[in-house]
Image (cartoon, rainbow, N blue to C red; front, side, top):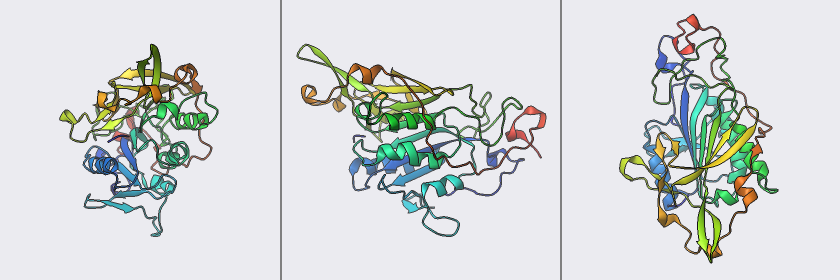
Length: 328
């Protein structure tokens, strides 16, 4: 990248949809030192999001030390266990009992952050647990030469990240074959047609793409930077050199297909804008991607250790309406 809150933990009240656990939430995870201007801007922007239920900050991706917003929302405090011990990501994942799936997750960090690939392919699953995730956006620079299929070194990271997103049914037992699966969206609304995920859907992963640059009569494909401009007009804060990112679509059978898209909605309706200033200053000297990296597809491989969802379980649906309207 270039330049949770503490929620109500009471059992859900079926008569008050605001507290129903059948909901899709948003989450933002930021990695890096707050002394870095870009990371500081990302943290400030994250704290200001009123439509994001879970916000987590890591000073070091290689250490499992999650922090969440302070009650006053003016800084960050370490996660604690119910026994008041220092909490890890798995503890935080177990404390999230007010949603059964993630509609969107955004990860922001510098592409050079040590241990980030390992975090994305393993530790992130301890926050997600067995919840479905409809969209994950990894907002870090130059991942086109770092996270891609069919590479002997980092292929395992790419495939495990895709594995986290393999479509699955909600662990709350809201079986769409038995009920309508109605639920709250991340904005707290019960809008028509919004349902718990199912294996009939696909999930999306967004990653930095590449620029097609002509030098010396030859076209080179250069791993692209990504940007964040917190004060951008209309809130469209995310940028890439040409407005493109990689969109990976993951199916329930593990197949993943990668395409380049322009102006993608990567998080909460924010679409990627073009910023030519992010272009490589000397493309002739930059590392380029070969065709196998750019065009390959792969199969998602779920991470070995996924924690179990600990939220409420649906036992009955009245009139097949879904748990949101269950009055028992």
